[in-house]
Length: 369
Image 1 (cartoon, rainbow, N blue to C red):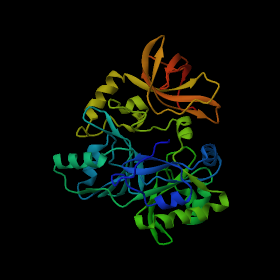
Image 2 (cartoon, rainbow, N blue to C red):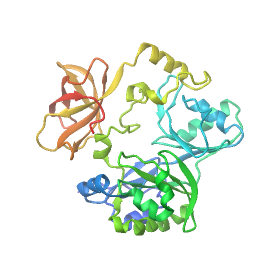
Image 3 (cartoon, rainbow, N blue to C red):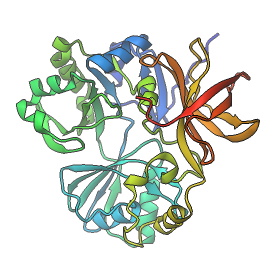
Image 4 (cartoon, one colour):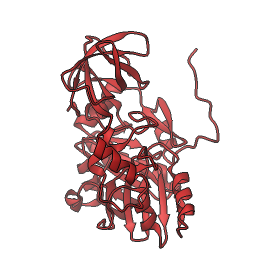
């Protein structure tokens, strides 16, 4: 008899929950204490819709940590090892948030709405508690909360056409990670050119949770001429393009340099930034691990695993494969690994899968595509 996820008040439903049920959602995960749709019963169809067309995703679980007040800019800089002094309102930046040892706590997108108003659009984690604690310890004056803001993603090469039909041709000139406050049929939202795929797209940050079904239906109707359909952050596409999954590809000791986030760390950021001194040490000494891909020697399609799998070279442990998938475009089984810097592209390894099998593979650079 299959297992079931027991409903509980501790796991919240998104404003789009009823719409996803009506659209035929078949599976959920839990992310930021919310139900996140993960499939609609057609895994390959959903993948190819993202690659070739346009897909809409309930990603309301991508919660916001909102900082408002005279010290909001100061706290944002304390939390983020990037120099933020030249960041303009209407712009989003990918940032690392680290603890005092330089360990990655989250990898949010930082959105600056004004000089005294910021959102940290977070991956899975309790960053709200961290921000509140740091603000209290630093005696900073502001409001820190989770606002009524829930993103709906529209992703894929035809996403631009749907957005142009809804918002006008000016959308074509909108730059990546830029955003604007607007409304759609009276529904308040922030429209951003962003999303967790490499296929292009937008995120509509709904600012009134009571209008979730209305926004979903508006997007669905506008996308009908382009054969829009429901989907979710696509595992196969994300592994092919090596998009970082915080908490999946990272562990309790991972620093940004180990997972290809070094370009998002400014080592000349102010010395009061949490973790910056530890990151100076990592930069000077070099990280102990790095991310590589692995192409597995297996003719059939291996089961997708998000459980870490030991990677060995010459029978010596060398790290772990953090996730794997079948790649429809490469027609190979591939995985993302966090391994010793002694391992390099071209090296032959053995991967111990959770089911007990050992599969050989070849290390490679990321991304795969």
